[in-house]
Image (tube, rainbow, N blue to C red; front, side):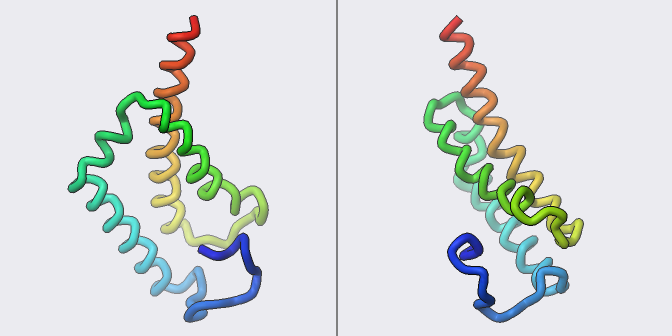
Length: 105
């Protein structure tokens, strides 16, 4: 989480390839999706709103590590949640941009 701020190690020192890290990341992902479903935030996310253009920030946080440190030594199991988040953030932006283009034309 603090990667852009510091490159020194902090926290518990759990390696990214360890089963503990994979389980923690998947658990966090599943809890996040469950909360978004329970609070109906996923439905709100898919509505057309200009505020969805601010989702470029989370998209960059998902993609930025890939561009800065490529190739990544990340387990394939952790790519699935990142790809799902990427799609969840890109859909509202695409819908909003389509709406803007329809209005402009």
